[in-house]
Image 1 (cartoon, rainbow, N blue to C red):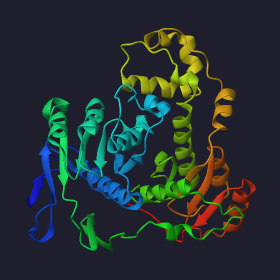
Image 2 (image 1 turned 180 degrees about the vertical axis):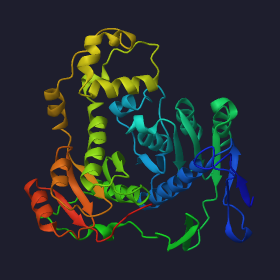
Image 3 (image 1 turned 90 degrees about the vertical axis):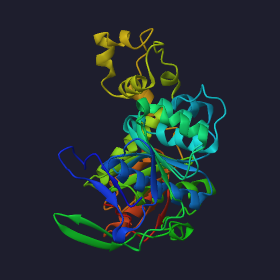
Image 4 (image 1 turned 120 degrees about the horizontal axis):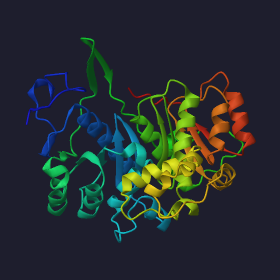
Length: 392
């Protein structure tokens, strides 16, 4: 197929809309079900690049959950712990395939942001992965293929309108890429930078002990940032992004946003949260909203209002600020990547509060010495990659 007509562009008033290749070439994608839109394809193509690179870098199946041209989560297919299975709502599903584990982790890290996501999978979608996708609120999925059982399940979703895209994994784009803004064509070389160990060789801190698991996590953070709208910062632990701060004008706001998401991910694992007495009728999305509220600072108001009776069987215990801080203090060995240098040491101080031990950032700030000093104060391991990863 040489072009695909879209319902409309970014907004319903933006018509006509289509995707096509220059010089009449065949598109590398086939729509197997549904009618993907303009933003769906932007998410799909960015997500596909991300998971393809994660698979090449780690050798593991990879998945990402995209929303508005930035990942809400990204992960590789490592086994889930029992606690992770519970907080990702897959504890009732039996054994998961590696690809299903990757998507459960990508979706589960920031479930609020992943609501209504577009999914990208590095491998052929299997039935187990499709069963997770089918039960979540999602706009569509892109993968290099689908088993017959998986495709049948996905075609049942959204009353038969779920978007399913198959991409040719052998497709290689042209080295130059173009886009138009205000009728003016922009052209640049594609960002073909390979994110590998070479970017993690310039240690600038006194502590230079980078374990294998942390090395993989830093690679995951940098690849994720490569396809995240800038400015961006990404926290990673155990093979999955646990907090992504995207599209912020200030670096510290990226670090705070991503850190707050990483904090929420970890707070969900606290026994008080794991054992919340939900009413049986409450679905996953409403549970996610209630958990986010319970973790937040204003939950005392909800308890006082009596609104808890619509969500829980019994009134939950208060999760105090002191209890939350004590729990967060047990989060350790988190990796953090930044798509550009840290201009001030306040980023290091905020990262430390969310258990960051390992950092990869380009370096090049006039205050690099102060940033390194702050990292040394907390016995962190920090590499200067020398490479900026802006994405727009």
